[in-house]
Image 1 (cartoon, rainbow over the protein chains, first blue to last red):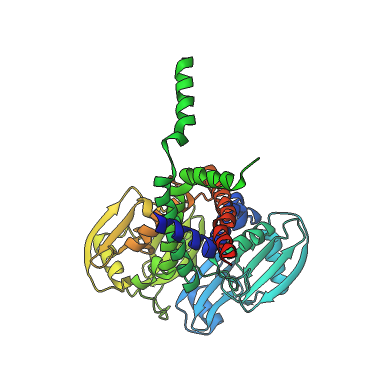
Image 2 (image 1 turned 120 degrees about the vertical axis):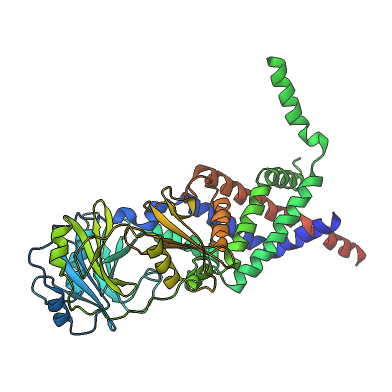
Amino acid sequence: MFLIRRLHKWFGLVLGLQFLLWSISGAAMALIDHRKVAGEESIVHSTPSPTPAGVLSLAQVAQAVGQPISQIELRPLQDAWVYAATTPSGVQLVDPVDGRRIVIDDARAKTLAVAAFNGTAPVTSVSRVDKPTLETRDFALPAWRVEFADKEKTTLILNAVTGEVAGAKTNTWRLWDFFWMIHIMDYTDRQSFNHPLIIIIATGCLWLALSGFIMLFSAFRRQDFAYIHDGIEWLQRRR
Amino acid sequence: MVRWPSVARKAHKWLSLIIGVQALFWVVSGLYMTAVHIDIIHGDHLVRTPVAEPISMVGLVDPAVILKTAGGAQSLRLDQQLGQPVYIVSQKEGRSLFDARSGEKLPLIDEAGARQRAEQIYAGDGGVREMELLYEIPGEIRGRPAPIWRVQFEGLWRPTLYIAPQTGELVAKRHDLWRTFDFVWMFHIMDYETRDNVNNLLLKIATWMMVVTSLTGAWLLLYSFRRKRRVRKAAA
């Protein structure tokens, strides 16, 4: 037991800070509403308009795209419809009625974002993202980042090729993301929880927790529970 | 006079008695989730990346025709399955499959069709061990529409593919490492019912109790290394 106590003490000294940080970041994340973190409430899903009359035939789409196609999808993009053709060089959007190519530029991204935003605050900035950032690390790039002037500084991320709203980032998410970084110990990308550092520290903390658990069996004496025993007796007497 | 070391020791001891088992669960489950790479958990190694082959548009029914047959379509996609061109149509009431040559709506994929598709996707060595059309969605693919084909393969960790009979598409891939992850995740977030509520009251109480326990432990450290220094001083 002496050895266990020493192990617990020294592991506590070396790993205690990370154990404490795991506790605090875990407790903080438990308090932050996950629906707000996921950004579900920031996006409105509009009911799609009926499909347009006289959509182009497959041959006409193929001609408009001018490349081999492995998949074609006819789908709504906010209140309009698009043909999305998958080609060897990526997805191409085509207007389903007149066959013109649709490009998601900054003006279009802004319009799409405003329509999808669940709020009335104006747009503060529209910028293109070509390299992964903390906010866009889970999304396909290139993307458009459209920020709004609401309290949460809601930012919608749109796929720059397809125009689809990929997700929303809010101040709640930004706060949560800080604790997530602490929790997974990936201080640069905040993405991977499968790296050697965290595995080594977690293995050490397993010994910290295990030695503490073993010590519990010898840490208590009969008199420690006397208060509980007395309390129960008192309750029984009252009955 | 308050004897602070005794207070710290007592607080740490009693808090540990309450939270100790859960602390152990947290560390063990956390260690598992960090040690087994998330790509393996997701089962990326179980399936082949589909090769995007160009579709020949000759002799195919046009989207306008399919839209007329399937009223109120929310989207429609031309794709290929087992070398055959198909339309996958989303409607309010669900998704369905159309033959892109005849334009006819296809019935639910039968056992042979599901087996063929699963075997084409599966990247492991073993063959199909068991197939069943499930009308009740098992916990490991909660939230997916029924019915669904479960295709179990021979091989390490019981690899299983789920194929939607409505569209013939792969819906989910599971194996025992995923199932273990899901199980330890349940202990990690202490949601024993739906396994997805990270804001449940029990977790909030337990985590903050853990914070206090850790803090009292840190406090105890202040007293735990003192004696030796004194001994050294005395010796000097």
